[in-house]
Length: 112
Length: 110
Image (tube, rainbow over all chains, first blue to last red; front, top):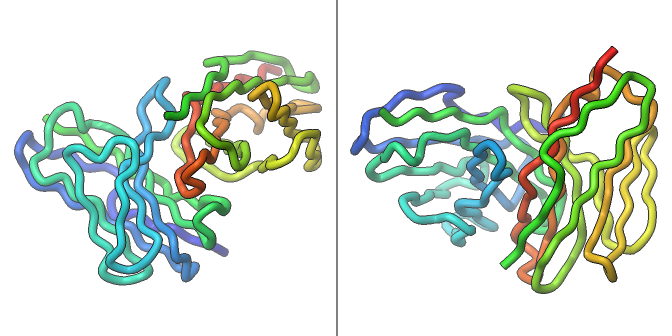
């Protein structure tokens, strides 16, 4: 069974804190993605990576960075969390860059 | 850029048929996908249309008309477990970025 695991289901952070969201996949997929999901806005792509140490900006990269040191792990970093980054964050992976996405359960982040 | 429009909510009774429309604007087009997400769960892939026409998978079918920049997901013989949000998504010119619509919440009543 394919599996994408996100390290934290719920996080509460304070404005200005540095936040790490971790994602691990066990499918040996080349491609990994970070989306944020907000009501009525669907899923918006923050960053994606098609290989280790490679990354590309998505549609809303401002305020975020990513790290992919190993094939199975893709981290999303909020250098200085702000209240407008309160959201559900979804990690996904795919075998082909244009293939079906497999999503994790999500990490709900609240920034106070 | 890319944008997609789909209704925000649809309500129907068990056994009924529901059609969720999706219109899109994109520079270049490589296909229309549909994902299902139950409350509190992860989105899961339902279907993908790269060519015009109807694709059927059990009770669910997906249709695409590239000339109209339009597609729909058809849910037949609705069951309570079909209560979920459904997202259309397009892959545009870049090919490697999937852009999602705002989602349609389907509520199935007894």
